[in-house]
Image 1 (cartoon, rainbow, N blue to C red):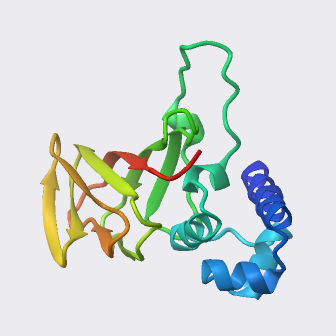
Image 2 (image 1 turned 90 degrees about the vertical axis):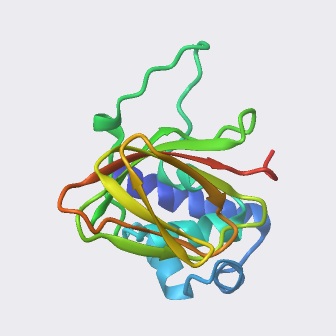
Length: 188
């Protein structure tokens, strides 16, 4: 867990430095308070999924790049284990395993998302052009798109615009495990 906090801290500092942004400028671009940015940069805070997304959108980077460094690519075949990657961002009720973090050559994040019973989160729009794909592997959950909650059961998939307000909730009595592909069309 500390490694991931350290990665986020280093990445956030580097992103700010590369852009020549002060904490005030980063706060304005991301919608995350200057105090929270400072805490994250010092490794004193584990941000929620919502904060991670605000940072990713404001800095125009993938959310997975904030969670862990890119795996080294030694060949065309790469095996990753969700059990070793799964982490709980600062909010309870959701676990994220960045199976294949964003790489410019592919243009997407590929993640396992686990939603515990009772979890609900409404997400602010991501940057223009972001598209999300969700496939429910086990359990069931609802996805909010176009102001309508849509129930998905195991084996069902949905594609929607991540650059519009959307949400996720699990009103069931068992966890819902999903695979998520988030496509970022304007990243190089």
